[in-house]
Image (cartoon, rainbow, N blue to C red; front, side, top):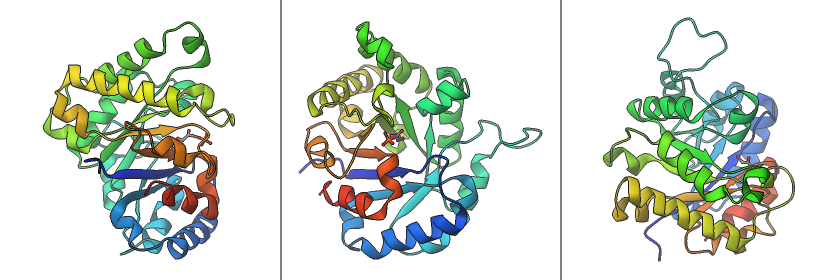
Length: 255
Ligand code: 13P
């Protein structure tokens, strides 16, 4: 039995109105054996506009929820942004930070992700820190270096105690939304490398305790094999989390 509790999360990205979100959450709640949520941490990340609705449906269900992004500022003149305290007030427990789509389309750098990580932690939110290389970087043999740099820079200044609340998600950019999953061996190798980076930055104990999720074209068909690898502690699921049957199946395969 691993000392790390499995963690399965759905990143809905820019999908689902609040009405559709309510429907999806009701179906997830109904289809999920209540006992399962004590064995696996189940979290959904809806768009901001659905968080309140999701909080209502999931009340007392044991299913958790969070946001896909957050500002590193507390408040003020930041049109279009959402603060940590706004998310906490809605009962969010987690926040995804540094997703590759944020890095790619919204120019988020490791430095910005680092500021957000610090803000989330000081506000009582648990970051799901996303890292991962592009296809070009992998082809040039730079994947280990790139991911180590992301981990090092994004976690700069984070103290050992706060690492209890950090989850890492390894999401190779070439596997996101492409149907091209990393093989269990490829993913396992990178998860081991990430644990190495964490050991260098903090300690072997912290490296051994931190949950590292795999993300990128996870489906109900391939989840079981991925989750059975030693260093893979669950998944961050995109497309397949938008259908309750597939998502529930994926959660079940984490047991
Ligand atoms: P897909 O599962 O759709 O490939 O997306 C993965 C992802 O980006 C989760 O954050």
